[in-house]
Length: 587
Image 1 (cartoon, rainbow, N blue to C red):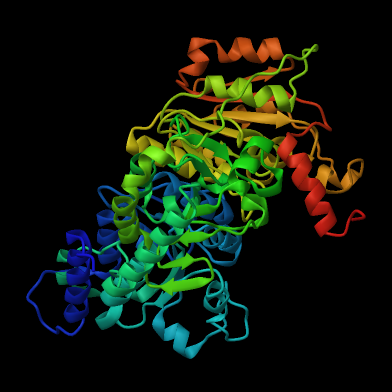
Image 2 (cartoon, rainbow, N blue to C red; image 1 turned 90 degrees about the horizontal axis):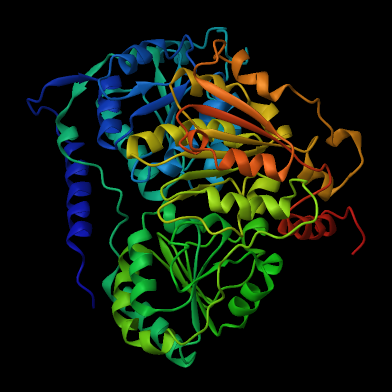
């Protein structure tokens, strides 16, 4: 039977104190407006940027945001991009959440992506007053049929928890409830804030008790049984064990526990694409990215021949792991051992105990061979910027603590096989896969990177994807951000071409004047940014080697001219599989 960690016990004490506080009527604390109470909680969660669009039902609250000393109103071009930005912010600024306050329906696609990929985001919707919600007048921004709850019902499908502030006596408890759900379950939550409730005064007493991001403690007896079961399977495998790390290890704050496990046991470690950079890709026992049937052959053989796989935070989507079956799965709120599931046994507490039990296996584990995870620039007898040449070349350009963002399609498939430097952060929306997502996400990621003192923010995006959400480049300029944006100009939707319709015109787009774009979007004087077009390998290599470019002292856009029908190896293979699944091609 294991002893509960002090942090877990303290979190449980705080939860009970907050529950007790809900029953207190008078406490003598200083009154605070509901809107300010919400902002105080967000400040405690280290939120410094709020994304969104002003509207007549949220303007009162935005007054409080704008006057807040530490939370900055960013202001986006549209609601969808604001949701994308909050998502990117939360992915980079771990231990915090993404925040945006906008209209609802335009933002739902962004929220759905955060829900699918387990990203903690708070969606605040300004709504009509509580009186109007009861009397249901024919108001603008409504459906005109009295269904004031239609948008809330829609959001229930894409958020883990919801609250509508209708009573000031329960407002603080409701805010705390959904924020706790957001940070412990790593998924979006939804809050409606009626216009007349923003300035209502409530007690500030609850703010003295911090919210906890730790899940409820594991049951000691069940936990001990699970540990014994896992150790038995490890022993039966004769140490032929590998560790596979995925996205939820990042989302649920288990990086430290995972790294302790891999360092002390010595087992080979691999990542799924969504778990890329969860562990150091320079670690000697790191073998690379496993993507099911489209993995590099060496990696595929090592992973699939192992007698036991310890999978941490797995998300078994088609593009992420090709639905390979794992022997063991550790999650934030449950553990699966072969065919048995154990609800409530979370990895945050379980992994350190498992590490202690398996540490004695280290000598044998370190004898298991691991493929070298390297990327060699191929020698090609032409000067065309090919996909095969581009990504290993870019690998040499990256630096420690860079934030590297890859758009769905050629970028996310191309970069997955490239080792990234120490303490870099990889951001990509592999499961939801909404093209154009990375532009708003880059805005949020760059702001988070600035808060955390990280290095450069670098975006790779195709010309087709960029046209969907290009407006947010203007917001980056307005806030003095300095991302490097590589635009892969290959004349349209390359990933769609390989899925189906390689020569169809529905996969074509209009070609834009990419190097004139930043001037139109806010840098008319040309002092805040610099744009380039590169057509050959030599031109790109020369640009990458230029110190002023590499230092990223201003916002930079690089248009790279690339072949229309060229794609990374993994994308071509995945497209063939997807084409068969979609019944576009004969099996």
